[in-house]
Length: 307
Image (cartoon, rainbow, N blue to C red; front, side, top):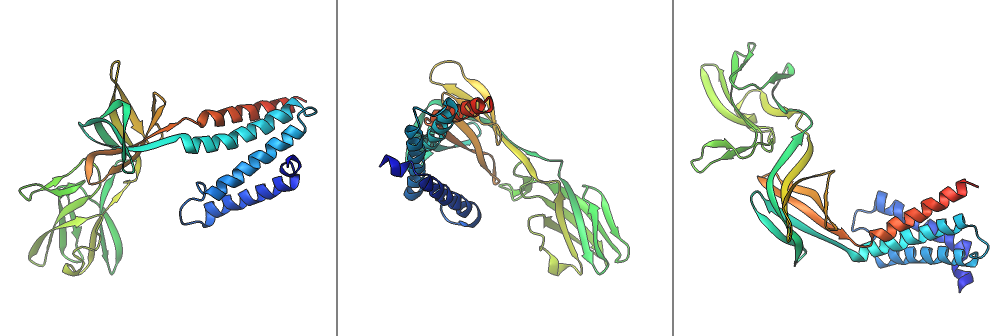
């Protein structure tokens, strides 16, 4: 049995099979991930057993670097299994001003050893978004800066377009009055007053719906944004442990919060509600096995290089 598991042919066959799985998952698979399937985990377990058997067969004669490298690979594989089975992951939805220590994983609810309160949520853009009014007619497309109070003239058509109002996130209040629902550019709109031929119209144009009013005008007029790409989104939170003082922290896409063995990630937000954020809470109790494997692998490589 040891001879079978220590075979180099088995090692290369397993590596070829796993390599094919990685290519399939990365390039071709459009369904559920195969990494959590039983057969994939069986391939990983067989590879770990193969490497362990190879090392055991040469334990007395092998160099320390050889043993450390092989032990590190085995620990990394086993650690990935431990990480999967021991990993805790749940969602923590929050609205500004609310505090909770409960997280949700499917239909189950868990209680954290600390509570989290959302103080505020913000979006950061790569640059300050700018509104642009575009006129498409027989002469082609022309862009004009959209500045509230300024006027755009089309002398060849005898038309004047006045920018009456710009809003970042178009909404209607209880009195049906136009207002900004949030400080973010989720539903940008421009109110334009179009004068020409003795007539005057007031129309709203939306960046998210460029086809509006196409049949009402003899030319295509629409409103759009430039520099509106979101760079980051951040939740400012107050963490209140069961014992001890509370502390403030910020959680952003590339800057999670680690506390008491848990990691809080900024996962998502709701464009329709500026005061809402969705955090993901994880706890990986098997990751230390992976770290030990990488440490052993690195030590083995360094010993091998010193020869």
